[in-house]
Image (cartoon, rainbow, N blue to C red; front, side, top):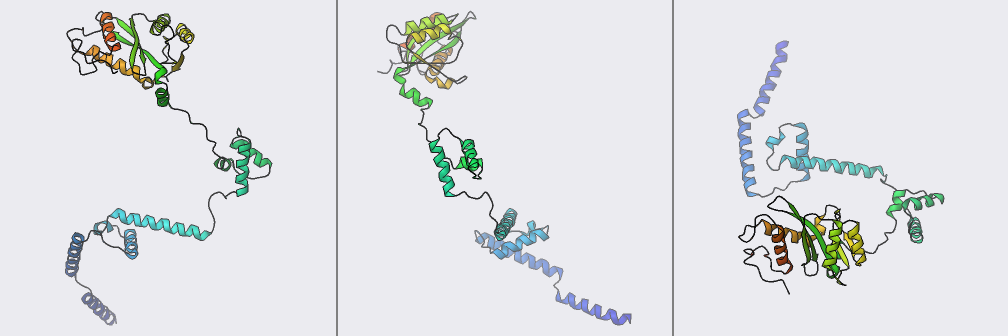
Length: 325
């Protein structure tokens, strides 16, 4: 009885082994297919894939861990992108099938017109006030929606800092202090006044102990009689005390203060100070390496007459040509 059962099973497995290819045949077939794929990959720049091909590789990536090694036509991240795109399409389709609209409901055109009319009639009202008035009228709407539909009132454009400097260049002067060390280990304070119109040094002086009274006296010497400018640009240094501000106001000059720690807002004075510092640090025969009061007065005198070297000169004995006319 047992022999009668085993004999048919052995015959079946023998027939199955004959129908299935051997392992050697499978290896050779894979080698031939890979060779053909390599030829296609050399000759074709980009393979044309169908949606069925994409679905196959997405399915294969979910059920086989070694799919990356067998993938040749595209990169693995491309297959992952197909999967994510299908996920988004599925949930988009499912959201549309639900029939429900997401987000806040749109307000009517009459309510939008009412919000604009209330804003035009009351320019000082904001979104909270208008929202409260609408609730008193029995109109249910959120404050965020009210603020989104408020008309944008255009304010007159104000000029920026660069425009101000360009518009008032003829009536604007800048002043600033900078320090210079001496051979005797002293610190000299140099006061300069620069006109913006031609970037000309109007006045300068050197002192070892600057005060607000001394600075006010320099303003009187810089602009005698009725030659005072309209605007004065300076920083917020504490050296410009009460005496200085009273003197400037008495001369009819309006002070314009730069922002704290913003030297770029006083560009002409800062650029001149940089030029003077480079002149002081340049080795020359006619000047000492460190500054001294006579040396600073001589150098600033050359700058005020437009005869100082601009960066390519050879020193005091070889000045560049005069200032621009």
